[in-house]
Image (cartoon, rainbow, N blue to C red; front, top):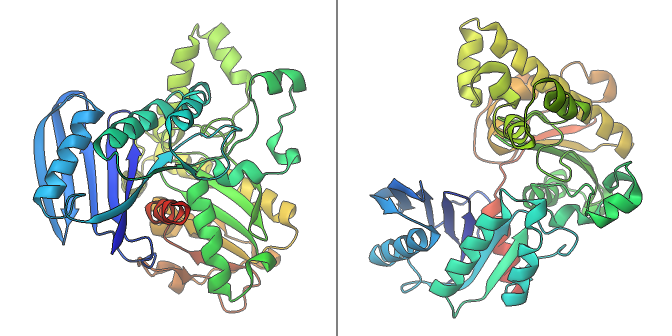
Length: 397
């Protein structure tokens, strides 16, 4: 059996899975792993294989050492490249800019083109490139494929992708709405028609990817027509630590009035805002505990989160004209019963009716949580970005 090694390289971590690209979406990967605290004396490698967890703790100075250690441990456990048929390596790349709309087999030229997109994603693309370069050296005889987070949304119509700023300035600086979480949105958009028993071309849907990072999209007939994230992943919905949409004048105000530098404002809006900035915690489980404990800041943070979410749901219902399904996915979307209920409360007049009993059921399989007579079906579908990357890599090679 041929497997795909999927790598998601971050600034101080590397996530990886070994995936059967032909597996069902609900089937767990053969192997999953995480290298943490790269560059720290207290690095850690965790590998999950055959129901067991295996740990290694040691100094991991860089991505090279992290991936070398991972492959060594995988081989020792009998589930590494020396033991399995690894047909390709799929790499998550956050930003493809205006260059990449489809997965691409990686060569030196492709790496340099990805590097050219770093100004658009300075926090993400450098780490993605590190993972690609190290993995190509360690596994030189296996084709490597780049799969871009922005790829699905390169199809956006100009009316949705273009910002109302000077057109020449925008073009010179590659300023447009790119959208992110595209692999997840595309994966979910392909699952929904099958669940509804309709051809993809006949399905209009709203997808709500709600995790620590959050985004929504409107998809007509399999093609995205709008999404909430923009030039960067900062835009749109309220997130764990990101502010989502704000008046851009706030940036100038903080610079002039508070004397904050651009870097300080960048850190504030990306890492110290959102649910964390409003409540002091970023995890929804902690937020729920604080709400139960009577914390008014936590309750208000949830209200702000839901209000922004409903704002975009309403906008996308109008943009699509006819909506066949609204789907929740990712950590919060799949697990937070209250967020789902609040997001779609009092919309019966628009054909949205959630069944409280169905909504309360937890599980790791796709399911419908709307009533039988709901005109718009409400679904919960677990996302599987790693499987989607594996499938794209496998199809390309």
